[in-house]
Amino acid sequence: MATKTDIVPIFEKLVDNETYLKEKIGIGASFDLGIRKIFVLKREVHLYYCNGLCDTQYLIQLLKQIVQINDDERQSVQAKQILENRLVHQQVSPVRDLNEAIDKLLSGLIVILMEGETSGFIVDVRSYPGRQPQEPDTEKVVRGARDGYVENIIVNTALTRRRIRDERLRFEIIQVGERSKTDVCIAYIKDVADPGLVELVKKEIKQIKIDGLTMADKTIEEFLVKQGYNPYPLVRYTERPDVAATHLLEGHVIIIVDTSPSVIITPTTLFHHVQHAEEYRQNPAVGTFVRWVRFLGILASIFLLPLWILFVIEPSLLPEKLAFIGPNKHTHIPTIVQIFLADFGIEFLRMAAIHTPTPLSTAMGLIAAVLIGEIAINVGLFVPEVILYVSVAAIGSFATPSYELSIANKIARLLLALAVALFKVPGLVIGTTVYLILLARIRSLNTPYLWPFIPFDPGAFMQIIVRRSVAGGKVRPSIVHPQNRRKQPT
Image 1 (cartoon, helix red, strand yellow):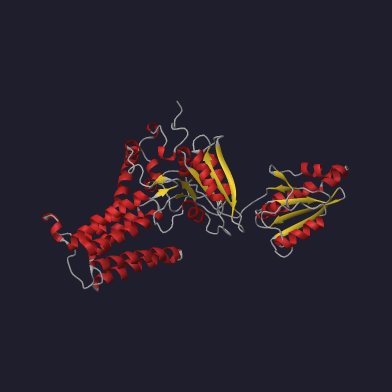
Image 2: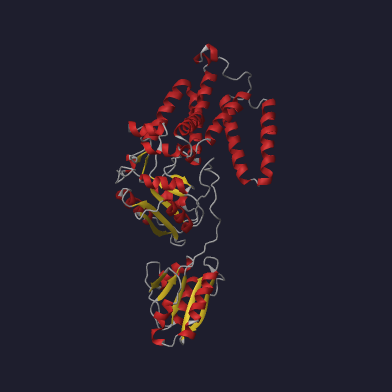
């Protein structure tokens, strides 16, 4: 049996081609793989298709055109050329390799072979099952576009192309997976993106050796950035075409994986994960205010609980006017244990909300808020202040635009809280220092994770702190090494 790299020429006899396809992919055994046999100018023609992946209406129209050849033509010597001219579709390409034909067939294209010919035709009549573009649940905006990426790579590239009608926008496709042969698209703007970055991304993706990409973009990410057990996200995900288009114009490379509604933005820093489309759908003043509130929520999600534990353990650190901070009643359970229990309880609720059917989610929320929370305080399992500060930290996590970043911040928060509980002030100082050093050491595709804070870039850092007007943003971020630094033509 031929392997993936073998080239198997198309046989002149259709019966030999049919036998090979039966052995290779199970024509006749798999119900979704079919063959239609017809005669054109006294020569047999086989049309192979995959049910569910191709548009039946296109298929019927093609068959009508092919059958009509017998009524309109008489020159059997030019049967192949006549057949090609009657394939009324904009995407028709020749094929000479049976293995290539199989790959196309299993992707939803149809294969047409003619008796006595060593080449055939591939016609793209794909119609993948899927949903229509709609607003992503995780990236909602008050004002703005309501379309979002879906699981169809063709639709996703069209949504991007609709926003950037530039002749230099490139969509290069690569098949990944020995068995799945998943389509992976690399998108970039030719005269903006760094050629070295584009080549690096293509090289890493082509080197992926795996059976299949059942988890789609997440599998690509793990091969691309080799993250290991680092919890912090090294690429940014988005389901919004406007966000992806903005990053393309800045010089980033976008990776679109078939069957995934999220696209990967590379390279990214920590500060890419804390920006949201809502900031750019408001005027600069409101956008800056929203951004500062979000920053405050992110800082609270990391440092609020460790600081509160420190003040509980060392009340002398508090000024007299803030002496009320701390538990007003005592329990037999240590404060750090209460915090861990409450934090894990919120994670239980989050997981339950994902897996709970929608009609039952409201009832589950009432059970969590009334029964678990109130009764847990009354029986002495928690003090009210623990529930308060854990809840504020959780809200700060939910205010983080990136879901992956919010989970990483939660892990950092729990480790800092444990360090403070064990070592008090030194634990907070040393823990925070180690935390910042670890973040500074992270690199995503040779990009410093804390840029523009470390290494410090004053101009870029001010654009992180203050949302500038579109007219004021005249240069692209230097961190992606764009070929054309200026955003606006001179």
